[in-house]
Image (cartoon, rainbow, N blue to C red; front, side, top):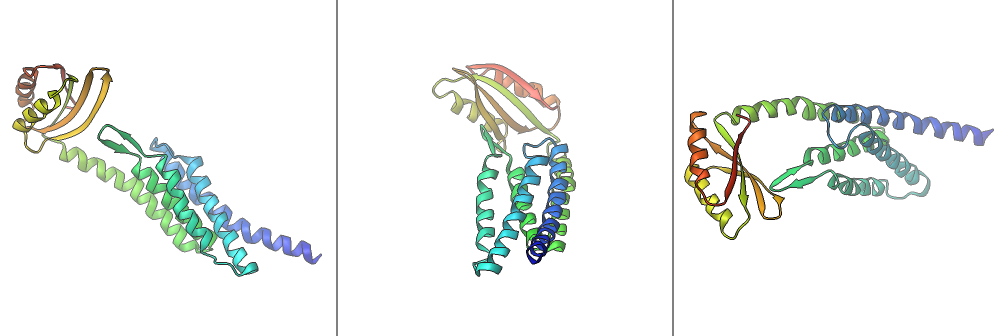
Length: 227
């Protein structure tokens, strides 16, 4: 009878933190799922529940064996980096997935807080996470749109020959010293696609820019995007 009571107490001790971790992880996961990111509902929920379970086990081992209660938690924090690294994608000069990786790390921390029964910090952490990934994402997009007014997004397809990129780079600098190379990628064996952003006064300048760049030897195709 006493053994049954102990099992029942253990069950209710664990079910609260794990259920809350399930709920909080799902909330963050739903936001990421709706935003169309790689790590969505299931990934964030599993990370949060797993972290909470690790913390519950860590505290229990400390109670029974006197071991360091923070050791397992520390391994969760460092180990989640491997999962986050899998969400980071590099395409040319662009890097994507950093926010998703950071979100997974925060979700793991929320799970650890829940496992340690620090419910208020866990809930506040979830709210902060939603603010950053939702509201701040909207603000960031608006800021990017405002910043890119008067910016020409050029796409060039060029022959991949010795010295060709340097020639094009120097011509772009003549057009705009503050121009930004966004991406360079292979589209064929001897052909590259270059994405670059150049500041312009108005859309009338786009034609002049295209005319100048089209005269460079090796430039096969030119286009203006998002304008």
